Image (cartoon, rainbow, N blue to C red):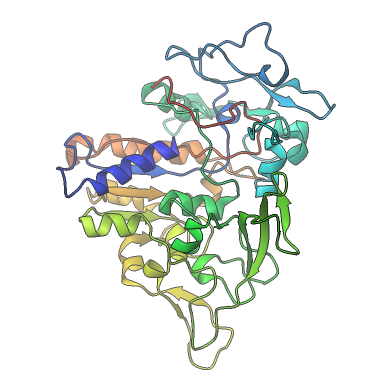
Length: 422
């Protein structure tokens, strides 16, 4: 579903000079919620497409037939822990708490379990990265009290969105890594540091390393910060010290921020020069805004783009340890980090919504697996309800939420496909 909305945004911008903005679409809002698979989060959609009685092996958890009258949700996942692929029934787990599955490229590779002949993912290795307790699980739809005092269930907002609007299940995210590269793909269609790297299939594939006190990312990463680059192995000659994947055809190499130099050069190694959606929308006079919790976090994609961020030392005189800030006019005009992303509610209420908006949450109200993250459905419901309630007064609001599916939890689909049950 994320890819579908990104295509819609791109089409609006690139077609601006050729045709009028489609009259029925005035605003696009991309709500990013983090790291859940459809099988994990949408277990209670009904009716589910059937699984054939004689299904076995790698197909044991694959619904068939999938039609527009059922939801493509599987009640089980495949595990090869015993040496033979077997179906493992998913069990209910609380939304908050528990294990956060490894969603690095290593985690993706282990869950994928690549077939060396077909180069398709078998998708039977989720047990390797989170164990069966958390990898083969669905989110329990626990009873809650709604804001109006009525009884409800935790996942009701997501189930209602899927049933009343549209729901896409035949895709994975474009990258195979954690939040930093994922958000770069959402905002730019790539996590490569430059157009040349993108052409050479060399992508940033990880979150900032932990070898320095700060874990700020992108253009705000401090000197000595690290990340990893994923690239093809050329001529069967891998770079020494790199980790190899996919039959030694792909390598992941640690890179250190050495370009940053105080006080002469505030542009570090991870300050990307590739184009982004900002480069497409702004020249076409399509307004946009990116809401996030704070600058420098891995979910704030624009602060990794040099042309938008334009990094500068906070204290350029006499403090070699000075932090960095995004001083660019584009960043100040289009990136809202003032109130943990909640300014989207103010802008909807004031009929000041940009034509294209990215909405990333504060950690406490994301869907990211963790000890206390419980308010994701309520947060998404607040944004969607604000859009719906202001349709008549603003005369321009339309709803199009994007529930970001990650991996780590077991999921039965292996490759991109079509949208069903919309």
